[in-house]
Length: 356
Picture 1 (cartoon, helix red, strand yellow):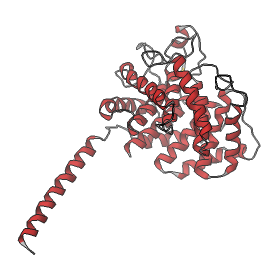
Picture 2 (cartoon, one colour):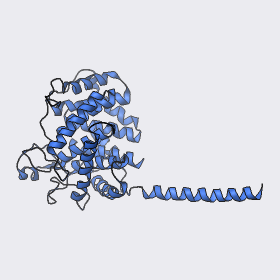
Picture 3 (cartoon, one colour):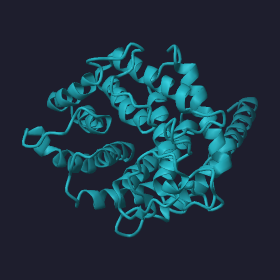
Picture 4 (tube, rainbow, N blue to C red):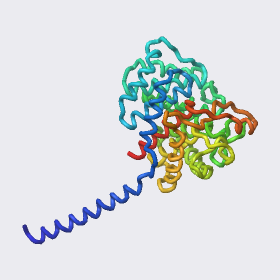
């Protein structure tokens, strides 16, 4: 071999080795320092929920949806099959979901995700019917007539319409979701980026803000940057996320009332915020360097609230909106509550996606 060619090959080899080493170092520096892997925690929760009776209530449905997207993230078809089996009574018409309220209609996110994973149009029919029912008699401003301006509605309505779009690719559903969430942000989001539970319930309730964070995340995952409401939705999301850093407890958790560090650490809101934060980094809406250490602390803390039975601890029970701070501070917590099971599965899903 010509000596010049040989020397050139040596130089190229050294350069490539150095380049690969640098890339490896950069990749390693981007790895999150997690004490427990999301896959382990998520599987523990799935094992817990499939042993419990499947039902239609919104918090259960959000958990089943969470199990399905978690299964997709870790490529575990067996989990999807288990969640599909739980839907059998509805599939066969032996059971029917309630309808006519945002908390009822959100049932549709379960069959929408089943349709996307299994392709059976029988799942799609009922889900689409629930999504369309919300706009049978729209308000003059274009919002659904089920509009109440409760912060919870951002997810109940927004996610259902987003799932309808993901399954049908019909822009009418995405336009509905974007308009609904934009108007809710205009009305309920405060200058600090957080949301009041309702106009006449001026408190930064943890899970209420979690619903908002999850709804904005679901929408941004599919909303084109060219959409008229994209800038406003992204701004609302980023404004909320940056403020959440200031209200995260030293233990890594967020609290029942976000601006009251003396209120108890609450698992469902922490999981929902993680869903938004991890998705934000994963999709370039948020800076890795700015948010990664907060995400590490939050996940490591939250994972510690999932016991060996797969039940999430310190979950606030269902909470109506009230103009009374004590009402929020004295809400009891429960273990294994589906609000928490859903939130941790969402968080585990986003963490898995981010690590991959």
